[in-house]
Image 1: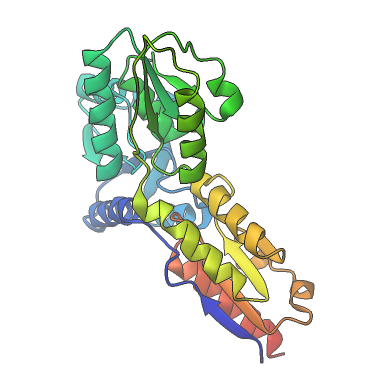
Image 2: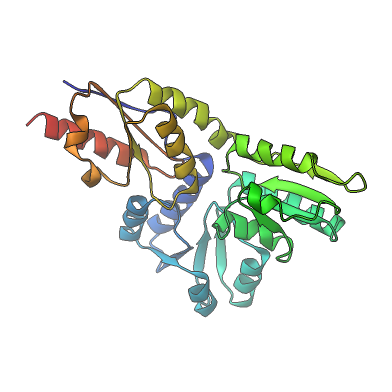
Length: 288
């Protein structure tokens, strides 16, 4: 009989757990409509579960058309313009912005106000919801860098204040810091702020160890999850037999040939119940 272990360190982070609890609490009160600005979590199956309870996902264009309703802001956070629009349209906001993200937003806003001529640089994914919220704290002036090639375009004769999206890779962030330190002009100021969430960063060594001790890894997460891509890459680095799936239906039973132990893990946006469904599918198929 194949042995299956679900990684105890995988599953929702604090910010996602809080956002989902707030949504469930509102929905349990029988509100006429509860809107969520963007997918509450980058996991299609969890979004489907909450849609079935009455949650309605909207985008920013749809938000502009709403009045006198309740709208949930997910853990990723939002720029100041979203709050201004809500006040204008008499929208009640249920703010589930992750406290780590909220603190980062405030730090960037203070730095921008104190040094408007400096380059506020954010290591993150262009267009990601969290990053849009961070850039919004600088009235759109922050520079987003995704890799070292982007960093090369900075003006090293001007002051640079470097921050990071909370779910980015810590080693990559340190590479960028070293790169800038080696190029910044003597007359310019460079300061970096490690704003990576440790609840996420600490999962990398943990998931690497987990992946190494199993014959096969099923990494369960939505493919839109930035954090999921980072963690899956780590699984692949430690175990070549790692497969990224979104649901139990994607499991190919031929992967299990010659396998004695299977590890099931996921991103900070992966619900425990979905990992359990993957385990149950394998057990059902292998018992036939």
